[in-house]
Image 1 (tube, rainbow, N blue to C red):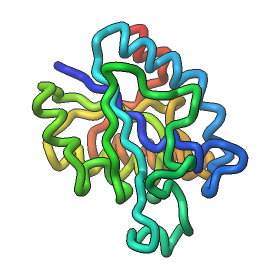
Image 2 (image 1 turned 120 degrees about the vertical axis):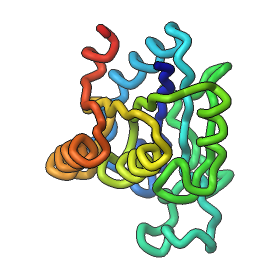
Image 3 (image 1 turned 45 degrees about the vertical axis):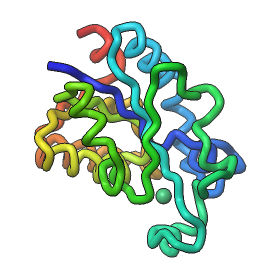
Image 4 (image 1 turned 180 degrees about the vertical axis):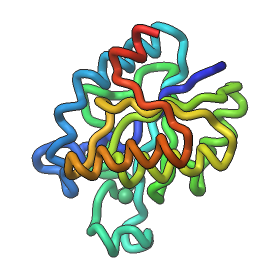
Length: 180
Ligand code: ZN
């Protein structure tokens, strides 16, 4: 089994207080996610950031949510404390799924990855859609329950249950994962 750690949309616009589409509950996952990133790098597990990078005035999603993570802006950058390090990968996406219209699948295949560890925002939108596309492509899934968040606790929990039931995702805490 070869794993990769995927960090979805931990961007200024979603996390910072003055972000365009702030997820208030996002801040609470930052310390654990930081620890998980350091653990992965230490173990040689590839770290891949999947980042909303929208084209202003073009991307369909913006009509629903308003402008956020516009290409080239502060809002589209990964938050300072979780900045990618040398050797990490960054995949730019324009839809909820990190696979849609990106080279993520090619990257994972070239890295020999068969198991994807999912973290980031938001559990019932981009994380869940990425899980669906990963499942369709034959990847095994681990979702880190305390390294993902949603707008509400209910939305978060229901998405975890859905990914477990429908995509066979294993649900683990960061602590459990790092102890394995
Ligand atoms: Zn978006």
